[in-house]
Image (cartoon, protein in one colour):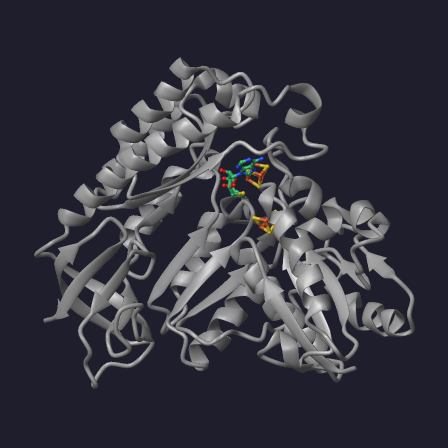
Length: 434
Ligand code: SAH
Ligand code: SF4
Ligand code: F3S
């Protein structure tokens, strides 16, 4: 039983972790295959940030088993592994062979071999030190390379399960990160995205996130640097000035607002008020007038009234984010919000709010995209072939928005080119080569 397949759910950190798992397993004699049906060992790298995520996984496990004639080992990795370990092990109807949490991937070869012997095995211990800095991820194709620079979260927002599933914050050494970036450049990569659950809380001895960005942006040959996901509490002016100064740092910031009401923000333990958040946005724009801003919003947090929801709407209209990811509050087991507050906003109200806010944000996004028509932008080619046409070119601009371009045989994946924006929808821009 040596052929493995990993299916990835959740955030970019999981995408990166799957790449780490592939390296760990291939070094131990396993072969990574591209299709679930060709594998003897199938792993689901899971997410548990919102609730339909686990239902999806349970169904998926049944589906994998049902479709099989030959034996298969099924393993659960990722955030559900830590959070739902007992559930997963106790659930007799769900046949899981092994479970590995986000800090246990180096033990996978042992877990798999024990599971092959018919034993149910698991390791979900969280570490204060594991950063996988000695593992070179098996990168998926594409011009962007993910690099986890820190892992874990110490913030304990009351709604969020991540501190429990991923453990304490820890950062990799700057030398180790810079070496990885240099290796990537040598292999032809032009774009990196630095990752962390709280990427801008990065801190390694004397090195701050700003110092690290400075070092990474000085690596010769690296043309675009993104980072995600930051927390609004860690945006010092020196970081914003560095971003403004350096051509290769993309002017794109994800600023998770979560809610527009200061009372709700306090209950969420977000550590800023509405006014402080708006002040930060103004400050960022005073340093980088053309910055692309995106955000995350949770609707229907316990006790959120209609008036408080309206404050979220008001902040969205005021800030005019380029993108907003909007979620209904989903109670997560063991979080502070689950223990202390009742999930008392009805599903109906949550639905009403999400439909309304998505419509507002869609209009804003369309307006903002239309403002770009006629402008020149630098894009990085991501793939040949769009949803509509196999010859069209799909690329991304510096704000991480998709740009579709006409077919052009002189252009390949990974090229950085200037284009003129000619048309816009809420989701994509269209352009032509200049
Ligand atoms: N570390 C990142 C976010 C990780 S989770 C950060 O702080 O920005 C990504 C997003 O999922 C969060 O920003 C939040 O908007 C949403 N989310 C997290 N827990 C949630 C919950 N219990 N219900 C609904 N949305 C949630
Ligand atoms: Fe979750 Fe808050 Fe940590 Fe983000 S900062 S991962 S929302 S606890
Ligand atoms: Fe999900 Fe874990 Fe990422 S809960 S969003 S996979 S950190």
